[in-house]
Length: 200
Ligand code: SIN
Ligand code: FE2
Image (cartoon, rainbow, N blue to C red; front, side, top):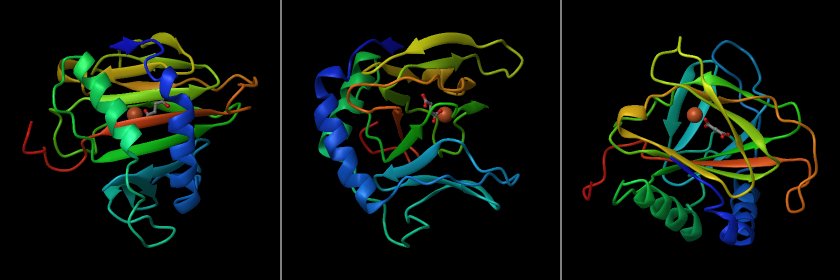
């Protein structure tokens, strides 16, 4: 589901809260198991954070940079993610992980599935802020050609149920200047990474 402009009214609050998070857990370029440094800079907030290094991809309660827990998920993040999920028909979405992706012009995310989570019954909720991007969204089989969607500031994408394991990615970011974020796109991806919450 694509909710155009769903996060727009909350943009300033989201970006302010994000500054608090990245002051504690700075954005960094992770290395893939294959040894490539990712063009997207990442951080996390919430009980679990997605990390990658030479040993693989996984969720971790600790930020490997600081050795401490990831910063708490700001209330405005949780509220927005739950509202967007409800709009898409997923009641009681309680994310325990929020991956923060920061794209500068040229940065991209190769097509992949989100499958490091323990339970696929919860949806993925993805919030776009800043420069527009072309989001590639396919099906659960890698061979299917993905559709291309232009995502702009405030757009929220959600996928779950039969599309939970859909392949998706982001085309290289075109240069530009956004009035709040400058030459940057921020994406917040909310997930249930650990065990399903009691309520769902
Ligand atoms: C992701 O797949 O984790 C991020 C997608 C995006 O940046 O829109
Ligand atoms: Fe993803």
